[in-house]
Image 1 (cartoon, rainbow, N blue to C red):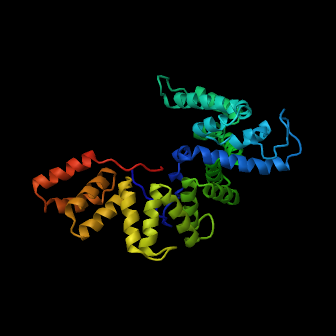
Image 2 (tube, one colour; image 1 turned 90 degrees about the vertical axis):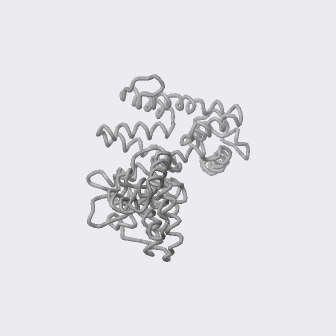
Image 3 (spheres, rainbow, N blue to C red; image 1 turned 60 degrees about the horizontal axis):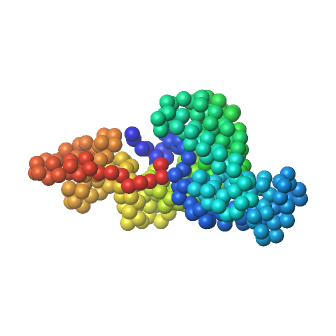
Length: 346
């Protein structure tokens, strides 16, 4: 698949390059840091709350085990399963309060099985949606996002946006990003709301939102072009493992857009994108190696680029082939067959 991510004014929208998927990086967050953030947030919320439907006292005064159930549920709504398990182990009151969210994790798991036909379960989108909605009803933003995705894919965009908004307002970065993209894609679009939610998601550390925000700022079709801000968000997304951002920040360094021109950093990020499987980066990195005389390394990256759909790599690869022995060509093909991309945030 061709990965054309650099903004070009003669081309159509790049917004479709971002799929509505949940980030793997949310699973990598520290369980302890999640609980610390939750408790810090809770002290602000509870201090402004004068009443609660919870059977527990509103006077938390440093004792987080006494948090009202409804506030604790809102804080924990975006938690992944490991973070939820960690929070549930803090004390009995938290374990009791978070029971609906633990149930939603089970429903979420079944929903994914039904959606993708995994774990010995036949694919059934209706049953998947039913499981996601039951999980959403128990307060999980992860289930809200998955239910919203099903609605979006089946054309029920208003229902999708309603679920994304619920997740976004509860602090779910994926829901915020998806809601922002919805506002860009629906007719009529709402650019102000789109940028609001994309920026909020980006500031919450979601790399897809960081990349999408950078594209908007770079292309200048949604908001006024701001190359300095665009390069800042490309770099954040690249450092967070987003491959397309690695490629784009390399180009920023290469041509000096939004950042001082720096050939060394441009090469560093181009190679990193190539090693993570970006076929255009593999092609361009292969060209750079060819110009330096590193024929064997060059042809490996060109071979990978060609296999990834980069047609321009074919001619240069053939030129280099003529300069190599049959043994060297066979060695390169064997390397390409055994090559695997480094893990990345898609």
